[in-house]
Image 1 (cartoon, rainbow, N blue to C red):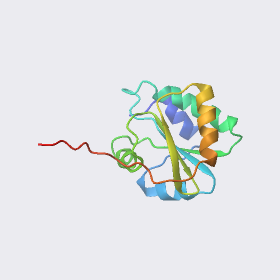
Image 2 (cartoon, helix red, strand yellow; image 1 turned 120 degrees about the vertical axis):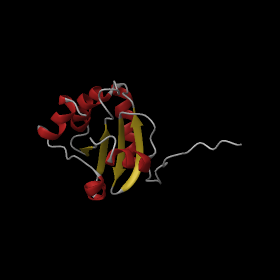
Image 3 (cartoon, rainbow, N blue to C red; image 1 turned 90 degrees about the vertical axis):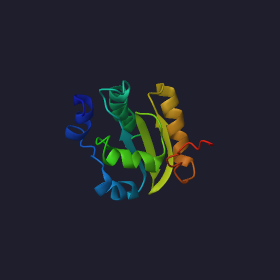
Image 4 (cartoon, rainbow, N blue to C red; image 1 turned 180 degrees about the vertical axis):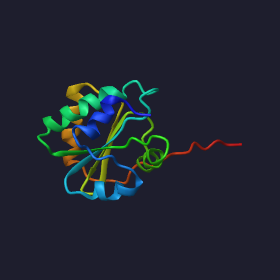
Length: 138
């Protein structure tokens, strides 16, 4: 399930739709790549807000952010979500030159977006947190 504001990112702004088949090529591109995981816009109330904010972030960083959209929440998106280890939608996952840098989840204040993303440009790449399964003692 998608929403016109999310579809606009792909149809009008020509952000690539990212799935398992093209994920590795997308994140391997030089520079800062950002994967937008909106989640299901029927149940994730901030999904459309971030869909509106993302193009503004691309403009604010003068084209230094290369966005892609993960629309298949329950198929490829679920596997990619586990790979990056975030727990809340919507999420922006930042990958620089193929290496994971960090993720921002839920909608943020504009100043927080700008400050956090600016810091991600100089942050070292690291291993994504991955999906955590809680361990319960018997």
